[in-house]
Image (cartoon, rainbow, N blue to C red; front, side, top):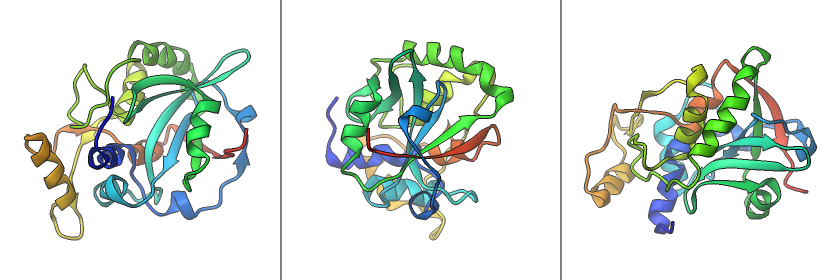
Length: 222
């Protein structure tokens, strides 16, 4: 599904959370050979447009800055990325195809992994994620069963095992204490109220989960 550049930038909103560190911190470098089924791939924010708007309203004390999250599936001979993409909706694509579109972007790809005691949830999560493939992207970030945004896609995949939690969303700019101007404009264009306080999730909040451990930064070379 095609969306305007403005909406496109907004999409990053729920996907990204903690800021600054994801792009500036030095992570251990890993390759696709190290990836395992159930790994979570977080994409660093660019700090502008939608990405910047997300940062302003979803920062956490963890000091990371992500605007997208995806689920990894490893088969006998391939690695796939399952995610809700702002352009194509919910898809399953090869890691090679995913990296091809990321290689020219100056954004880190950071891998987190469920801690051992939670890894039993992975097979079911991948099965559930596949049932959501083909759904359009959710540009309103209001939860529903017809459209999905990236964090929503992953949270739903693991929902049966309560890996992640939905939290009240906020669109308030902490510097002003008011709804961020970017989000005011976004929801005016959608002709709906800003969904302040409704349940949701975002990449930064999910990266802060105590059920995850950091693995390293994924090399874009393949």
